[in-house]
Image (cartoon, rainbow, N blue to C red; front, side, top):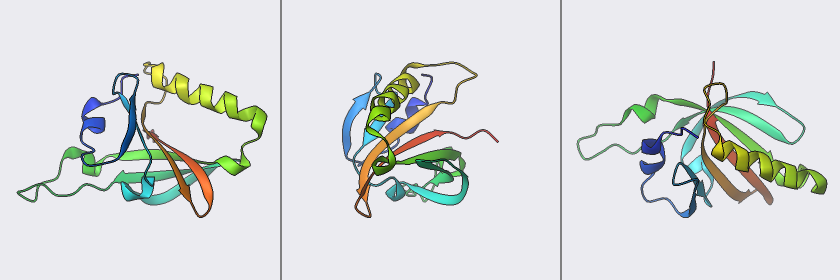
Amino acid sequence: MGCNQSTAASVAGKKKRHNLANNMIVEFSEDVKDSYTIIKQIGEGSISNIYLVKRKIDAGENGETTHLANTLYALKEIDMELVKPGFLDEMRNEIRLMKLIDHPNVLKCYEVYDTKRDGHEKISIVMEYCS
């Protein structure tokens, strides 16, 4: 998929459910908002919202941060209660395909979060941001 392996590897101390696509895309069970700061909403659909986000990175021993601290990402947050049962398999297939495709004309997917917040299950996909 061409995902930056240093991005996935740099998320130290997080609760990984399991690694996907040969560790190129990482899936987490904690809240995506623990790792990313929402800058603004940039889109919305019938079952999801898209946000411009930045990674929250703790400073290292010398107070230094990596280049990832300044990288912008797109975060697609899907409210699973709004997903129709017939669309669920299609959505899972889309996420599965995103993990496999590595092409310059296809957005890169970096991380997938599956969490419950406000009584709703949410799937959050951290993707490349194209401006």
